[in-house]
Amino acid sequence: MVEQGAIYQDASGRQTAQFDIMINAGAHNGLACYLTRGMVLESRRAERVQAADSSAIFDVGFIGDQSLSGAGHSTLFIASTVCGAGGCGEAPLLIKDAPQIVWSRAAKAQREPAYQSRPIPLSITFQSVGGTGNAGDQEQAVLQFRDLISKFKLVPLRELSAAN
Image (cartoon, rainbow, N blue to C red; front, side, top):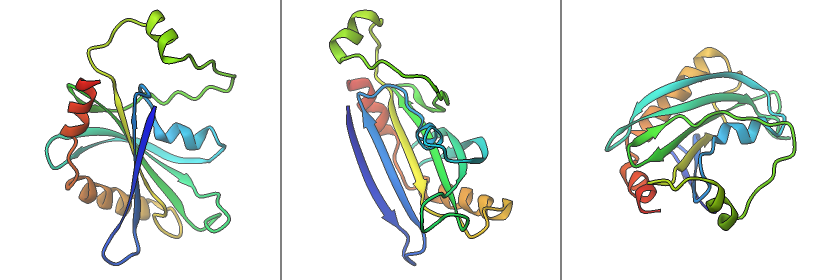
């Protein structure tokens, strides 16, 4: 698995967004990573958004920031999608509370059917969406997310998925 990330900040320096892309990881929902660590889910929904070159469906969640600097003062915004050759859509939110066995790529290939493409997960996290995490703050975060993703190209992730 290869994980690539980038951090973007708006011109005012008030909003920071972290992009996380995984290659050869299979389907993955970034929101589940936070939830399996005990973060509290405040709300969750699917959002269809228009990127610079195509549309996508993201699994959007708001969780309470439990960090030392954010506890009780902010909400994390997380948006996850999985891109394949045919488009980008929601990743299943699978949270398992039991140990999981992870197979090496060679063993996994022997027990799974061959895929035409490998999914490329994309997760975007806003480090803080406001002081209270109320509905107004959440809607503002969704608007900021829509604006950010409108400048982001998803077709390269879909092409990378088809090449894997």
